Length: 273
Image (cartoon, rainbow, N blue to C red; front, side):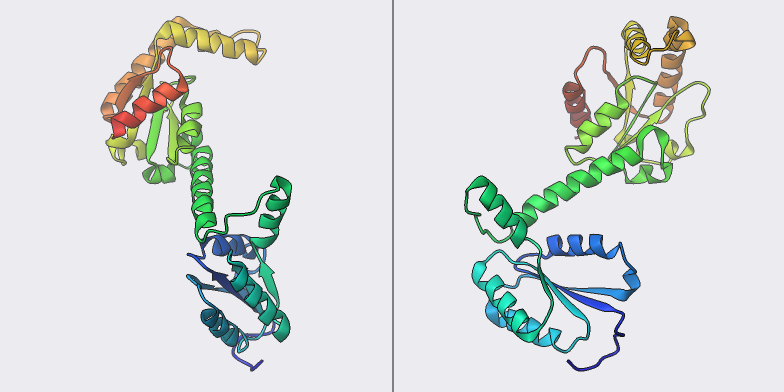
């Protein structure tokens, strides 16, 4: 290979794909983050559908010191050519999808569909869902308030109004959801007043129902007594305060009394639509 400006301690990775290259890029970035990213350069080659394009990429790779080829190509004739040429020329190469596809094929005793783009569609849906779940977990109960503006939905309400279960359920439907608890002793975060009120959902509940939920929670946690937490006067005070805040921030309010998570989620989505 000829010399260029890349030092021997730097690595150039060619991410080669017969579709968008998103799968290869995501996996390689996940690996690269474990090392010094400044010393790793990833160059993406997408929509590679014929041998001529692969030959051109291999020619380019021969001009780079410390090169690694990584590919997500499902068509056997293309992957076979790439592997053969890389081995012949001494270029290190990684088949990202092949080993996993083969393992699944053996375990299921079934041949893969070998459809270009199929893996990307599946991966994209999975990555998006994981991203939404991660967002909801990071922004639960008033954490990371600086990210409220990035949320698709912000759920507000007093303790035990199903905010967290709802956020996880909705995140599995690809919504970024944040939750904020309301309590008379805590001033609502200023960020609540700075975001679009159309995406704020206030959750309210019948006082007697909430009292039962809290009493069951106390029993489950094996606490000796609930004190103000299960006091009807306290519960009414909290709900009245929450209602006042919800009106102030112009939240859309949903009564969750005796409703399943799925039904509440459907009602929320109908409101924002």
